[in-house]
Length: 177
Image (cartoon, rainbow, N blue to C red):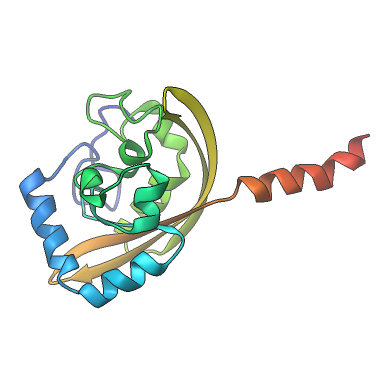
């Protein structure tokens, strides 16, 4: 996917980014609904609101905790893989979603489907660097499109399904012993 143009159904190249000033302004439009932000912060799943360039404009407390930042503003303007510290987010100079590895990423596929107006649920395994150690995480991700003041955004939610994957292996394993 490196140096990809515009995928079918999308309005802009995968590499295009909004400025930090723009992402902050988009985030302020969203955070003006303080009751909604309080509800999202009460949800235990990681949730981020993404702009049309797939950059975070808002992250709930669970998302901030998952990516190990004290303040959600630290991830504003980043893409999901960059915020999660995906090992491949920096493979291409254009960032998360543009390397060859990204072509199989369930998170990217879900987000791109949402940008085409379709709600999507995908699974993905992301290798991330956390405290100078590599960690493989299994996630189920949801991406849902929504429009606010004529701009398209994506609600991105993720839950760690490593326990579910391990349980499945343990259930299947006795068949092979």
